[in-house]
Image 1 (cartoon, rainbow, N blue to C red):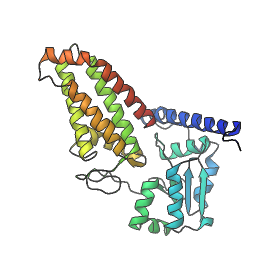
Image 2: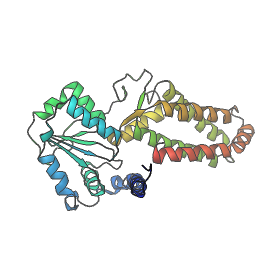
Image 3: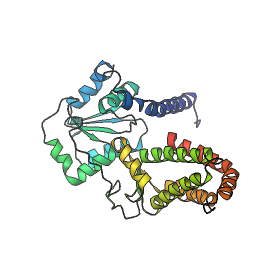
Amino acid sequence: MSCFSLDGVGRIFRQAFRDFLGYLAEYIAVLGLCCGRGQKAQSLEAWPIVQTAVDKHDVAIFKWEGCGFCKRAQEHLDENAKVDPSKLSVIEADSPVEAVLRDVLWQPLMTFPVIFVRGVYLGGLDQLEEAIDSGQFDELMDVEQKPFPTGVGLKKDPLRLLSGPYGQPWYCFQLYVYANWVRLISVVQIICMALAIALTDTYPIVAVVLLWLVAIDMIIFTVLGPAPIAPISTLVTISVWRFRGQAVSSLPYKIMIGILYTMSWLSISTCVFDSTSCKSELQNSRLLLAGLISNSVLLAVLRL
């Protein structure tokens, strides 16, 4: 039997292209937060599909094809929440369905799965696990069915700065971080490094101080996580909270943007507030900073 087929290769390319368009849509959709909502979700073609799935079932889960988080969420619903399969709706989130969800949830950075319980928007995998562990899931299963989309926003989601994604205290070594936190902190780093390059000839000391501030923030992130004593990381957490995405392992990012980036920044910033020395070191390190910027662009867009 052949290992490859044209149909299989075509499906892979179609999936990759759809994912690429999805990534672009995430950032284009951010403009909607500034300019107000776009078209009404009720006018979108997939509105009846989403509405029926939510209104006619105790639990509705919208997933992406090949999504590991979605698979785990379905397993939790079956094994831990003991949801009757006849009362569970699983919908593949193609582009029209995703458009409805994005408009209704007002989340420019859409992540999957998207889960509704008795018409109440629960969230994703992390929120499902928390709800099952705390007993909140059972409480939601007992409430009166909320017609779609009136259940959006009913579940409280308070900002938590003093604990990590799985409840670890902020002063512990955080093993997980939210996916969209990684993206936004990468954008902040891009801006800071681009400013450092731009200020090299005119204000080299300011550029060095800027790199030191980012480096100190990343040292705290490496030792702990996006802790409240790390000002930049805390501002990013606050900014991205509503659409923070799934919890992912923090270890690759602690090694890359925590250790490797910080070592690079500190090697550039060894001058001690001497304008001439700082200017020379920054000029010699422009290529290094440009390389770090390129890597951060990939992190911001693809979260590689």
